[in-house]
Length: 217
Image (tube, rainbow, N blue to C red; front, side):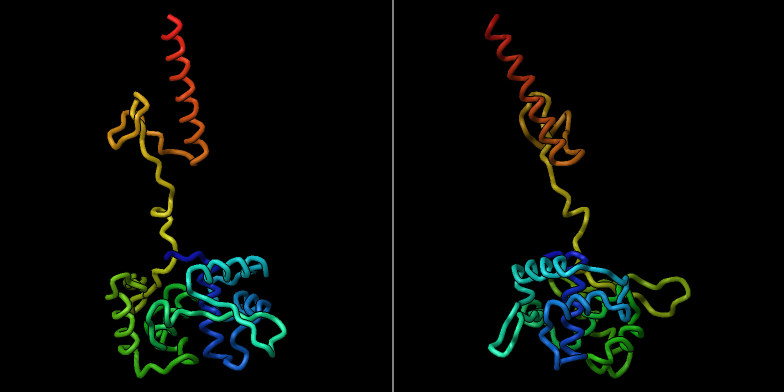
């Protein structure tokens, strides 16, 4: 279930505010926009608009990762995440994922410091044990990138975003005789889906013209 950059920012912000400002959680739409665009503890800093954030929340609701609620005493709807249930993660795992979603690749030492408002890790090895556990799932949630030049610790990153190559539309190749198949002499998989469709229509028109000419003969 790959997530877009704005969906990751929304989820990370919801998890953060649940731990750091529980008195104002769940978040109103405007508070969520502010949390997404805040200039501290964010990399990169963004400037999402309200409509962008609300559309992201809707997609997250469709994926079962967020919900919108409105109690009798609430003047406006409020938003909350559902990651603990959806991903079966505990508080420590959720804290690490939140900081990775909000700030990108980091070392275990950086993660320990930046999650101290969420949970308390005894030491850096404790952070590393949780990270390793997240890699050992059937669908790993984090990945070890190794050490950057000049660093003494490995850098870790989440694996929740879209795989750009895997998400590209696939077009079945076409043989010269017009039939579709895996063994193609003239593949048409390059270009946008619309361009491929137009080329196919042109090929079909040429074949129709050829058939009409043969019938006329």
